[in-house]
Image (cartoon, rainbow, N blue to C red; front, top):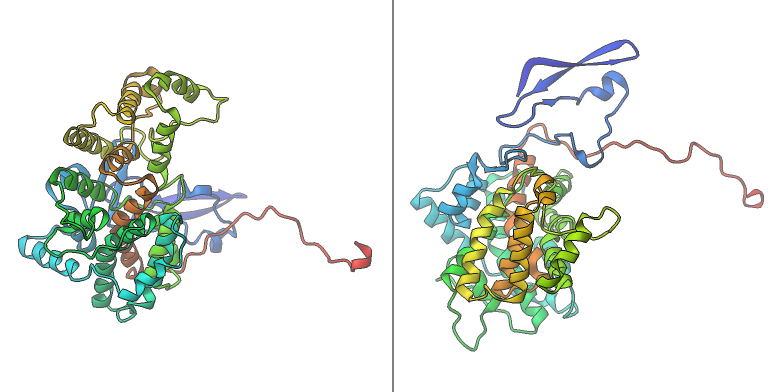
Length: 430
């Protein structure tokens, strides 16, 4: 909201006033929407490090405090007291559900978990060894060809149906991508299982015998979903918003978000973390790689430590650290070589003066990668799991944007530094 405070920008002796807007938490912002008209100038902010692209009521991050809020609720409280579907309801509707609302919402999602049978044929168009994220981009983008009965973004009921479909069908699509990659038959969803247990059934079950989900492992994966459900205006969320600002259908917007999330600097970080552990190979080599990580002239980076936003400890990492310990204990993997290596890296990062001084603490990607590996999820599927969880955040942000009366199609400006105007010479004179 605007206040009586203003910021003054003086250019060539002429002053221009711009209102200052104040949010519930975080930095105040200078409203520069009239900057071009008043001054003929634009701002330059590569990577949007100091630019607010929208007003939002969904998620808030305080990187200095290590705080993450969904609709005002601390992530720690949500992860400890709510299921992922309760959190999805919160993000979608703004409030946590009561018992009746929870039951109704869970039933609605179960009714949407199956995908159109013809959609399964899309998978046959991919090579068996295709990266699951490549499959995800294509299949999710194709959903609009099968579910075009509720595509009017101006209709609240149709928006709600579309969001429910995305939440419900992403686990089925992710599990199918895994099954196709491994050559196993697709597993139909089971309505007698809850959301996360059903996903594990579709991932790891076979027609040969009934799959019984382990409650400890199911809770761990449900926590991963909750911790990744939304994260303010990150790269993939901004991609979804930008795509949606043109009026593109929501399935195409989510597909664009998945493509962005695939980048190793974003959703691929936990995959990169596991590859790093595989490269180190053994606890005996940890010292060598720690030394390399401290060497400014060495290109090696310690993946899974530190965070662009959190200047202190990633609050999600604290929760995942506990979940990680529970999973390893449940599966008897405390002495497994890979996990012993990870624990040694964690110990050094929490105690070594270099890492403590630079606040390079283990982040959520470090622990979630270890947990998923322990659950039997292959490294190539990690980002698919991330996309599954983040889909509710994307859709919530998409709906917030298209219902904002101030929303316009996204059109970033640029600082052109190419060649000055030139004249084309005839071919014979070039």
